[in-house]
Image (cartoon, rainbow, N blue to C red; front, side, top):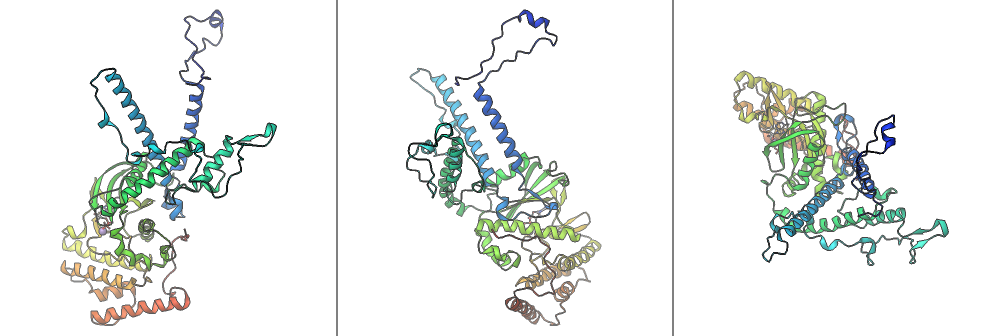
Length: 515
Ligand code: ADP
Ligand code: MN
């Protein structure tokens, strides 16, 4: 209890005489039931909350807006952390309440009951109690900043009015901020270190405690994660990310899972209200969550490692960032396709490894894949010509090769074919770009030839029709040899001139910054 509490004026029956004469009526004697300190901190809490709310989604860059997020600047780990901390706080209060109930019920009775099993042992906080020391008073500060700070032993500097003690809010706050630098490297502290940020002891202690338990948790979880299977839909961090999208009103509800693949899980959601004024969220959305388990992604290296758009970044990145790059790549590629007018999902937002796009389908029912739908021969022919056209647009206007094109990644919706799943798509100048294109052509030709489309070109004809490369070989082996020779020529050119051949148009993507 606070000694300076502003206690409520007791309600003293009918007011004094002056009240009835008052021309403005009776003043309202509202009772203030909490202390000044409480009011103050409530205000502070509100301010902090507002600040946090404002900061919560700027990293969610609506695609229409231009410069895309790259790497670090979309990091929301600190938001995640705050949410986890809030959860911890809630759990702690909940448990305290349980303890009080227990006490009340048991009283002095010899037989006691326990609510132990109802406790919320939160995963982020299961063993952090030993960290609950006042950080400021710890003598052997393992997180001490490299440069010793200047508060002398006597605990104050300056003279007279200008005296600054070690308890000075500003000095302390700055020191606390500097100390954050010494948290474990994987602990995201944002870029507050570069600013004149002053963390209060309370906040700093909470962060430190969280950094500790997070470190232990990640060590504990490491093994589990390595063995997690494709069935496990999403990890808690991803769930939190999704939850935040709903909480921010961007999505109305996430209704369920549409597909669980080796590398991604796709959910259906109803769109909410728009985040930015010029961006309308589609009524139904598909959320593609790229799996953060790394095993499945190892064999995809070849797509991204040699993609010069990502080359500079690849070597410097950890696997988690590489997974985010898949999501980023899908977003860039979809945007290019959208600009060329190719039917495909429209990007809504990208957040870390989660890509939200428009839903192809209706009323929660996704459009069927081409492999699952039976088309009339007329529609089949129509679909074929549409795909031929789209492959040419993709190559010529988007400067892309799908690289996983088949009846599995084409949806039939509204009487036409929609292309999806373009995270692995590459530019034709990718060292294996033409091989990927040839594979795509083979899938498409075979599907339509089997499907009875007499007009369907064979894979070699289709390859030439898409690329205009006019390879003349009349058998597959020679054809492939010529493709590889072309790729090699291009690579040699890169070696000698440090640039891609000019026959390929320039990249329309925004610059990618090193991290
Ligand atoms: P992957 O094959 O790598 O797991 P996809 O992007 O192909 O990922 O998505 C998997 C499945 O999810 C698709 O086959 C399709 O059924 C469904 N799907 C993906 N995106 C959408 C979308 N925008 N609208 C409707 N369904 C989608
Ligand atoms: Mn797919």
